[in-house]
Amino acid sequence: MKKLKLILVALLSLLLLASCGGKKSSGEVTVDPSALAKQLAEETVTSDTLSEISTDIMASTYFVDTAKIEASSAYMSTGASACEAAVIKCSDTDYVSEVSDLLKQRVSNQKDLYSSYNAGETTKLENAIIKTSGKYVVLCVCDDTAKAEEILKKAGF
Image (cartoon, rainbow, N blue to C red; front, side, top):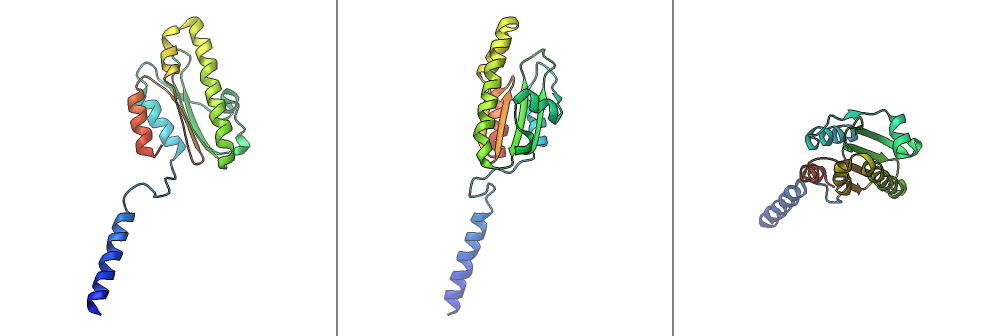
């Protein structure tokens, strides 16, 4: 009987240790949009300084419905570069696809705009990162896409 109890305790201990392995087993991402957007803006953009924009400007830039957004943060260039970083947490997963499409449209519009006066920036737009996970949508147009991918991978995207 003692041997059986010892085996059960050992198995339970192993299960508890296995469940403490970092990422949630469901794969659900939980991030602070402000912190992630700031990290992307600061660590992946070297050609320009990005500034955080207000929710109103974000809504009018990306055409998102703020009533369907739980939390968000976005950083943009003053126009000198095409760089920008946005992290949006939707109120529910039903809106994620629409936000992703709106961000893809934003990148397309920016490509058209920059190709007419600063064609060097179009490469950044062609390499734009748009990722979704759970209720989150991320856009990153930057100088260092490898670093952005690394940051997003660590965040669970």
